[in-house]
Length: 303
Image 1 (cartoon, rainbow, N blue to C red):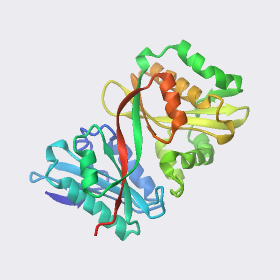
Image 2 (spheres, rainbow, N blue to C red):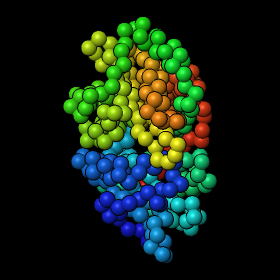
Image 3 (cartoon, one colour):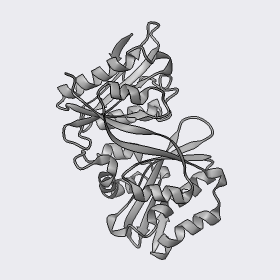
Image 4 (cartoon, rainbow, N blue to C red):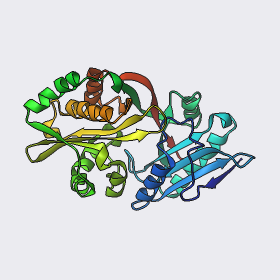
């Protein structure tokens, strides 16, 4: 087994075939190029003896939750686990992050992947939050339900709108950036979301915006997941603090679910942290079903 840097544009879908959180090589490379505008990012693959890819790891050298903490991930194909592939890739991530001034790295371990949490603990990880994954079957979603869920926001004077194009996205960027920065995932000292990354994740056809009069008060966005039947992943739902408590998040998620259903999406996924009680309550009201989630771990620099 050898670890080497990825080749720009390399197809990584095969090595991630069993990774439910993988969003595809095309989007991965879009993220890497956008991230590189503001900070160094590094990625490697592990090759088996037959030159097949058996692992993938990445570190984004920008502050997440703490000024000295970068974000990264390590993925090992199921067939190559318990062969120290993950340990070697984790060491590569930690060395590179430390060399770039980040002696800590935040990563996640998936409940659904056997040995993932145990590996994180073996590598010296410290738990730092839990993400609840939940799913909603859109084939059972009725217009009557959606209309009822939207009523409180409508009574408050909120209307829901799609996004017309990239020009409108750029106008929405400051509002959306501020909502990202308020999220529990970000902590108190994360680097702000850059416009470059925002434009990778926030596609006009994937967004829904809440307005009260001319004022933007909330938004939600999704990305398509790989595989079949068609499935989507809610990337983010945010409401301005001055307008919370009026059912806006519920209306956004409900109307967005209806539009996804009408476009042929069968199931929608969402991941929310323990600390995000209000959005977890919204999910419960809509009937989202709990699935295996993931635990965040931070890792200290190697001795």
